[in-house]
Length: 591
Image (tube, rainbow, N blue to C red):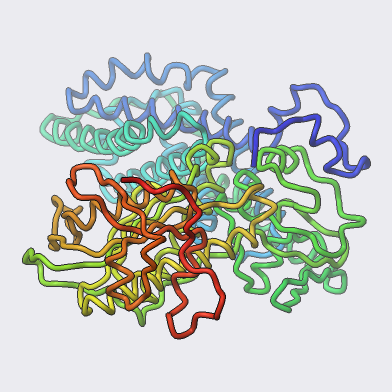
């Protein structure tokens, strides 16, 4: 996972998979670009509409005065054509996504997004007919006052349904843009402001609608004479439009059924490392095959080929695989994927193959290992403290995809949490890519020190296994630095508001943190104070003790250096004769 050098990636895919060079303009016609642009048009229309309705907080007259400025473009022929085209394109892309899926098994988020995309036209048909089509046919314009009076006084139930439909449409659009833009580097800086605006706009619009409704309810109503009558009643228009949108959905479902019937004997088999084999309709992606067979498969972006967390290593059946699309190729290059790696959400094999998912799904926390707790009152006690931190992770993560960074960090946190809990400790907090664990909250000091040593060895073993599993993706293995100390600490619930939690402060915490920094400086996996080893019943060879200065502390700390922290998990009685203990040669001593 290093910056991509195009010269080094030329041989990654077979020559026949090289896509034909196309001019730049077709990129705008890809489904993802069309979805974003059509959604942007619809979102801009909703924003204008909500701002106009929010002016009801000022007065109905303000709403009417701002109408030509905010909505004039959308009522002009170019704006109307653009709006209709965006709606049809967005709806058509939802139909396309529905048809391309070989299985309807999907995550709740994917189902919500697809379902709302198909339902939204039906939710807003009443408003479109009453506010746009009927006025165009009769020649009588529909003002904001007319619409507010209809929905607030004449048909409050219809007004509630319309408000719900617009809020749902707004939420659908906001979610769509969040999923599309969250990986952009600039997006994190604007998340707070954009989230506040996404919530504030519909709230102000609903308040403006209510205020305008109360204002109109207090005024006498003099209906305007109609200039003409529509050739078709509004109810008939709504029914025809409902049929016009329902028919394509029914057609897609029938086409899916026909495809399943025709391809009932045309299937592929996907084999997984655990011995499972899934039979899926030919044309399915590997990710869809996993879902059909109930095989857990990570896919943070929902199968859109953006995050690369679903990628698999093809271990058998690589010959004859379809070439990667431009989008898949770009994502693989960004993730520095070696040969044989494909995106499960984009790969549609034409024959049987065997794959190994690169990223294993997270395992649920063992409910049988409850974290120890103390009473909320603060108290002083002696604790064994473990500080651990990944070395150089922040620098390396700058060259990874954000999705990969999050996944790898969560996998590392999982390793630390499981090791600490299995040993009987309490995982206090994660700080960036570092962690703080406490031992002795409900155990005797001697046992607490043995637990800390066991946990440190477990973290080292788990990280080593992670490095082996993701060797191709990591490039070079992740390295850890740990500091262990036994000393006094103040334990209690600390923090503010929702951030209150059990934690510890004091000299023991400070020393463990300094020993972890010392492990980085001396290029070892662990620096353990002699106090921990003595309490745990381990031998402490005097010649291997280092005096380490600790900032803010007068006396140095006697500690031992361990090049391989897995040694800490070997109890004295299980030690193999001749096995090396703490490494004396891992750096010079201080003091």
